[in-house]
Length: 445
DNA sequence: GTTGAGCGTT
Image (cartoon, rainbow, N blue to C red; front, side, top):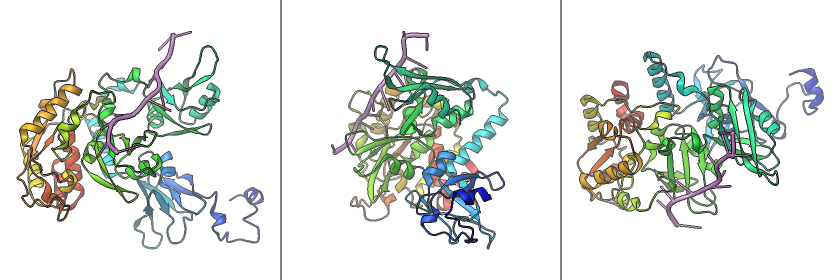
């Protein structure tokens, strides 16, 4: 700390050499965070009570789900306590330790795999790294192009900004466009929200730049049974633990549901069918239906119970996903067998696949029909669905107990349709995360 | 109370 700092912040009085921090004094403190242990740390602001919000970390390190640090005593890496999106200081305060960002395992794995794939495949198609205009939604009326340029320049070279205005009055319409010179800047800007002149704004690929079949769709999940006290920040902080969250939408007025979009469609797929506890409330995750779709798929899906029956669409079309496209990922028989074995043995985590515990009355015909229907509905012009799809089945656990007592996996029955190899991958990744399934990941995924 | 706003006079 420089002398001038002491002058301008008199609370660190000269005679208080040790800077012992009371609560009040911890306000405006920064902690040091880095992507890797040896990299140059970035200072991240803490809250008034000395905690640090995970969302603050994620604003600088998109996708972050926690922090760790090397204990000066044990020399081991230690995790920072995380409760409801709030990071709590280690016993002796944050001090000058450098905290290292944790990323969700699957996300990191996927990134690494994609890197490997990129490196190994000679055809480096840099073509899809061209930037495009991004729409900026939610701008304050007063925001000018100058303001926009100033704000976005912190992410990279801005080569275009526009604020759309009413031709007659000249009033802002509350949205605009921005374009970056480089693709990395664009990627970062898309994956976080932006505080511009006092309002939170979202940056997205404009509709005109999206494929006709909206590849984003499969990265989005529907969150049912939300309560009114769940803010979008709550949801963002909660879902961050699974992977990078790029959007949260809560309809207003309150309607007891929300949408959460991930950067990675596999993470979205892997959550479908789950009941998760947020703020003490059980919410239900399922796939997000296309926005302006005709009605009627709900009935098809509901009875299959595990929610997988209808998540067929879009999953193999994520070619514009920044994290990759696994549509050419081939399932070999060994993997199929391994997956099936994993599912059949009672590892107790099948609940994650079929927590609904519906009594699984449908056979393959019914849910197959549902998938096929979804396919025709959403995958127009795409015929690789069937070639990359796979179905896994296992025998029904007969102990019904739909009351919710007993291990969740006992409720699983009938079959799970895995609509694409990418979904299977997501499943395997999650299986691998828990218990004896670990070998699966090492060997097969 | 389980399926969502707003998208470019280029």
